[in-house]
Structures are given as C-alpha cells and as structure tokens.
Image (cartoon, rainbow, N blue to C red; front, side, top):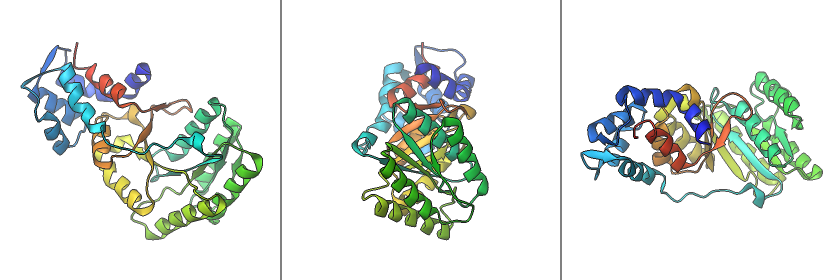
Amino acid sequence: MFGFLKKAFGKTNEAIKEVVPKKKKQIDKEEFEEVLLEADVNYELVERLLEGLPESINRLQAFNSLITVFQYKAEWIDPDEYHPFVEMIIGVNGAGKTTTIAKLARRYGQEGKSVILGAGDTFRAAAIEQLSRWAQKLDVPIVATRQGHDPSAVVFDTIKSALSKGIDRVIIDTAGRLHTQPNLAEELKKMVRVADKALPGAPHRKMLILDGTQGSSTVNQAKAFDEMIGIDGIIITKLDGTAKGGAILSIADRLKMPIYYIGTGESPDDLIPFKANEYINTILDEIFL
C-alpha cells in the first residue's frame, strides 16, 4: 500500500523536497508551515494545525497534528448491506468519472461481485461510447441508450436488470455537469428519485469524483453537489499528476465526508482505499528520518 501511495504522491513529495532537501529528526515550525502550503493545504487550516506545536517539531508531533483533521464522525456505507448495491457517480467533466467507474467495476469484480453499469451520461455521446468500451474490456454488462435520451430511464432499466439477474453491484454514470447549470441539476435530482422508485432506498451511495489536480478549489464544487442531492462519499482522482496532495487535508477538513478511494493512475487497478494514517505517513516520510 505504501508503495502505491508513494507513487501517487510523487509530485507532492518532490515539492516537499524543495522545502526540505534532506530528511531530519526535527523540523522548524516555519519550515513545516512552508511544506503544508507548498502541498496546497488551505492557509487557514495550516494556521490551525500549527497551533500548539513547538518551534521545533518531531515526527510524532507532526503526525498527531495532521491526523486531527480526519477525526470527525462520518457515515461509512457498507455495500454488502444491500443487494443489489446501487451507486451513483457524480462530478464535473474532466474529473475522471468514467475511468473511476471502470476502476470500481474492476475492484468489485476482483472481490467476487457481479457488476452492471448504467450509462446515465446521455448528455455526451462520447461518454456512452467510452463507458461501453470499458464494459466490453472488463466483460461486464451495461445498459446504454443514445445521446439525448432520458437518463432517468437508464437508471430505472439498469436497476431493474440488476434485480432480475441477481447482480450484486450497480454503478450508474451521470452527466459531467456543472453545479451552476440548474437544468442539469434538476435532471440529477430526477435520476435520484427514479432510482428510489426502481428500488426503494436507492441509490445507496452517491459518490462524488473530485479532480486532485484542482486542489483545494474543489471544496466549493463538492459543497454545491452536497446541497443539491446529498453526497455520501468522495473519490479523489489524478493525484499522481499533481503536487497538490496536501489538498486532501483541506477537503477532509471542510467537507467532513468519507474519502473512500484515491486514484493513482490510468489503469483499472489504479484505485486504492484511502487510509488517513498511511496518507499522513507518506508525506512525513519525505520530511523525517
């Protein structure tokens, strides 16, 4: 796991090395502040994290400070409590939504679960084609229609197909909408209502995909989606391509939602469960002996 994380945070760790070229047993408070800011941790949060720390900080003190960010009460949803488990994937264009769906499908398949995909992004023909190609590559069924068709019908048909075939996991794509587009927002709300009609209680998890290269700026986007339909969890993508790995601290601090996975690359296997202690240790490994 640590190897995957080191790869994922390669660029972040390079940025840290520019501040702290050589590992040491203790770091000055000012240097630690610079490290956090360089990794795109929100300034206000940095100030809070530094409160109560001595002028010379050791690894344990740094760890204890950073881990407090993740000590909030979050409601984690267990897919095994539902059959089928219906998951709706939400996020703006370019965040890596379709690739993340493929990664989730691959992961569930490796866990011995059957999967069906719903191509609910009928706004873009390319999205339907891309998801259909992934379904073929992963050898999982997909419910898809043509561009411009009602995405709620796709939601309904996908869930009903899963019920009739005894499928374990339903993953539904949605249009890569901006939260500032009211017509698309209403469409998303309708998809949620139709899922509940097809299977009371569905979707069981509404997962928001955030682009890690956007850093702390994704927080407002997430808040808007949460107000719109209620977000149950987060996946942060593209962390291997950015030096903004510290933004995870800002995202967790502001949203206080479960972070389920992080994306570490382009292949279907490049999705790993997020664990706060391992994430923090990966950063501190670049600072301390």
